Structures are given as structure tokens and as C-alpha cells.
Amino acid sequence: MPDGPDVKALAQRAKAAAGVELGFTPLYLQVRQKMLDKIIAGTWPPGTALPSEQQLALQMGVSQGTLRKALDALVADRVIVRHQGRGTFVAEHDQRRTLFQFFKIASDEDGRLSPETLFCQVVERNGSAEERAKLAISGRKVWHIHRHRALKGRVVLVEDIVVDHARFPLLDTKVPLPNNIYELYERQFGVTVAKAGERLKAVSADDRQAALLGCEEGSPLLLIERTAQALDGTPIEFRLTRCLTEGFHYSSDLK
Image (cartoon, rainbow, N blue to C red):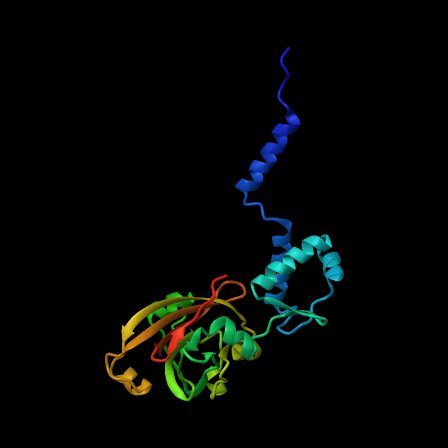
């Protein structure tokens, strides 16, 4: 008589198929998300030292190996940082992090430099349909930040930044804004920029841009369109940067 079906094997295959169908998430990614939720909720603000791996594993109810994989994932996403001999901390937007993670313009001769803000203006206005769509907001009011930024003493960047008026109340009272604007978002408004997507396009300078950048009208510029996102993935900033590339270039390390 032929053997009947292996009920146990069939059950295991059904369970595995169900897991795939339902989008089963590995345990370490579930732990990563729980920790990220705590950071988003402000339980662990930027700069906070996290408990030891042993304590965290106990809190999360997982092994230290699983906990360590979750921490590695958060480190890779630059949400937390490890300091040798000091421990693990929630990342802050200090000058170094902003420069190397979010500023990609470098000097042809001197490499990556920190830009200096020479002019900054904050204006309240109605956002365009494109701006509101980029920020995924229903309200009409936005803050428009206009900045002139210099490298090696020369203005090479003109920035137009738009953020949600409701999310950054009284932003105009913070003028002059600090050079590291992401640090301002984080410390004054509790909004951490986790990542940003950029699109690059070659354009020509119009008469106004040429006057600001000290170049001839029609000179080649690099247009950088950026949408920055918070830890929970919501868009928080839409930015257009026009960059004079004479003596400078866009530098991005692919890993």
C-alpha cells in the first residue's frame, strides 16, 4: 500500500508559503523597527546612549545575536552610531555627519569642504502644487528658505528650500538660521532627517542666478533637486540647489 502524504511536511510547506504570502519579516528586522519606533517617538532622543546589548536583548525578548543584527542594520542606516569604548548612541546631526552624508559638493583641489552661509532669508508663502505634493501636505502654507552658500570664500551655491509651515512653527524667528540647518530641525523641532533622494540635471544660469554666482548668463550650472525624509519616511524638505561647477564637482561614494 503506497504511503500517504507526509502531513507534517505539508504543514511546514503551507506555513512557509503563508509566511511569504503575508510578507513575513525576519525577527531582527522586527526588533530594528521596534527600536526605530522608540527613536521616532522620542523615547531615545538624538545623542542618547542606548542600554547595553544584554539589556536591550532582555527588553526585546530576543537573543543577543538577533539584537546585534538589528543594531547593525540601524548603524548601516546611520540612525545610531557606535563609539569605541563609549557605547552606542542615537545619531545626531553634527557638522561632520551633515557634511559627509548630505553635502556632496567638493573642491577639485581640496576635496570635501564645509560650506559657509553668507545670506539667509525665511519667507512665509503659499506653496505651489508641486511643492505641496513633494512634501505630501494638505495645507497651503510653507516656509521658503533662500540661502547663498560659499566655498573657499566664493558663493557657488544658491539654495531654495521649502518645508511645511505647520511642522516648523515660528521658523522665521530662528533667523539667522545656523549653517547646519538639519541640526536646527532636530534640536528645535524634534525632526530628524534620516535620508534624502537627489536628482541631478545640467542647466544654464539665468540673469539673476548669474549675478548671485558671479558668472556669465548662460554659464553651466548643476541643478540638484532633493527631497529629504524623516525617520518614519515622511517627506519633510524639498530643496533646489543651483551649483556653479567651475572648480567644484558633485562627489558621491557608492557602497
